[in-house]
Length: 144
Ligand code: HEM
Image (cartoon, rainbow, N blue to C red; front, side):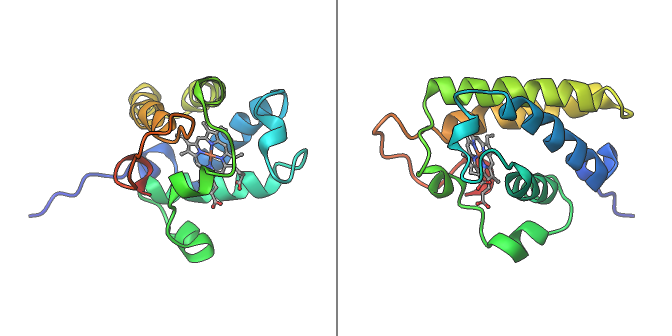
């Protein structure tokens, strides 16, 4: 008998969980004077919500719609147009941590799910920094 670990996508309740998480995250970003204006469609966050929702759903074991719509994630490359330094990283993580806490409080096993999500987000946000001048390659977090 083979045993397959259930994906975080399934455990968290599928697409509606990621839609709630990303909506809560962008509520924070919309009121952030550093991050908000970086978004290309500012003050409309709907296109960015759509992309982040699909990316996270795919990353955590859900459908591959992100790949179908956007191709390979290449997250470091896609963040090059925006300055990602310690301030931007920390603000991004602050909004995401608040969204994770809020959203995970509503699901079974939410504490474990929150821990797994943040264990990915914290190093991934650091990895996306592009202010250091270091020759970081495409290997690493974020499946870029
Ligand atoms: C764990 C950390 C992060 C993840 C997983 C993530 C993920 C993503 C994804 C999937 C996209 C859409 C890419 C596309 O298909 O074009 C995106 C876009 C973007 N990200 Fe991030 N990001 C992270 C951190 C950050 C940080 C720290 C900043 C701060 C400047 C940032 C700013 C942006 C902006 C301005 C966009 C453009 C909006 C868009 O095209 O959707 N991100 N991010």
